[in-house]
Length: 117
Image (tube, rainbow, N blue to C red; front, side, top):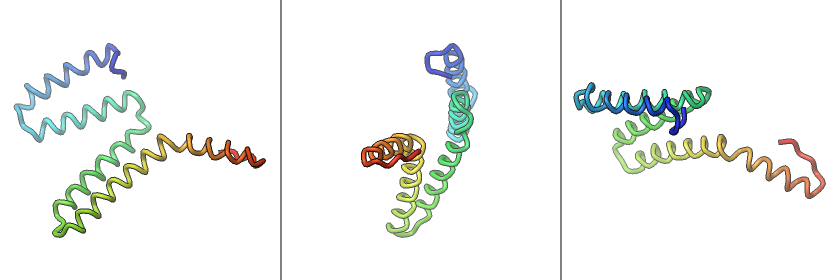
């Protein structure tokens, strides 16, 4: 589903009405609705990466809980940086891997080595 599609033109008002009028301004239900709606929206684009998005969401949620439970600043920093590093790792692998692999292979071909990334 794209932002300029007719499906999104139907999806957005439905979520908006559910958010404001059917959840009765209950913050917990509003957050659950937005989470499920976001997953659905993402799955309409490409369902194969939905589990990666769910894993990232759960990781951030549980690291947030661990940060809250940590008694000292060092413990909070550990959980914070764990979440940041894992999420940046996902970004690096799924968005930039092909760019760096192709650039490395092209650089090595300048030295006479043919590498198939």
